[in-house]
Length: 295
Image: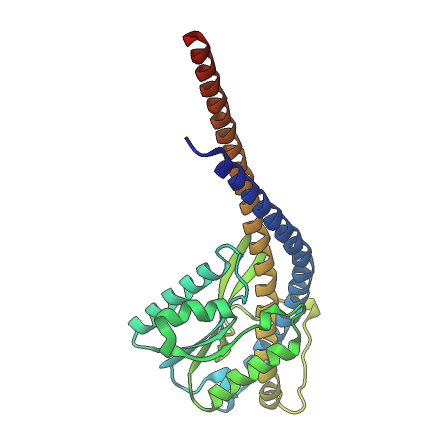
């Protein structure tokens, strides 16, 4: 029979844990609303930017003169994966599911004879990936997701690092990997090709009545040369906003589950405590009655 004092201490401990998880759930719920608003507000600009670039690219007559960020460098040997994870834990499968998908992608690329390099943004992603792919990690950024508000300047810095690596011919193809926010309980792991920019399915679907013919000054190639580097920053910023909202949703859901589990555990422990206490009282009564009868 479990010791009554131990059970009482265990119940007290679980109740304290439940208070913490409940508080974390409420904090995450509050942060989620703001993060969701920012993620949803960032989508139209990023999507329109891609559609505009797609329209410009379609008007380029000489593909050989297209910027490398659009046409690529003619090679497909080295792939860079920019992985957006979190710096804090206690968010359920937010990081582990993302890293599992990244590892599967790496194994697939390596099976095709490709070389994979990794750029991690977030402490948790780096810690998990370095266990198997430490030699593949060429860049890492930590603590950026701890900020109260993620700024475009942060994404711009990440984009410049990616561009510097591309100019130094450290990779041929770049993928951005992040958790896209769908709802508080639903995330979608997204692989987005940044370099060369994939235009598949990104054509402008504006109704014909609203379509206009534009004359570009300077020509499309020069406009693209300015827009494409900016687009890298815009897409990374969008990914960071989506990831931030997904993290808060995952943490809120995880803390809600933890709170419920703590409640269930308290109920079971309380029942066990009452049974043990009743058994102790019954035993004591039997001993008293037996002693009285012996007299």
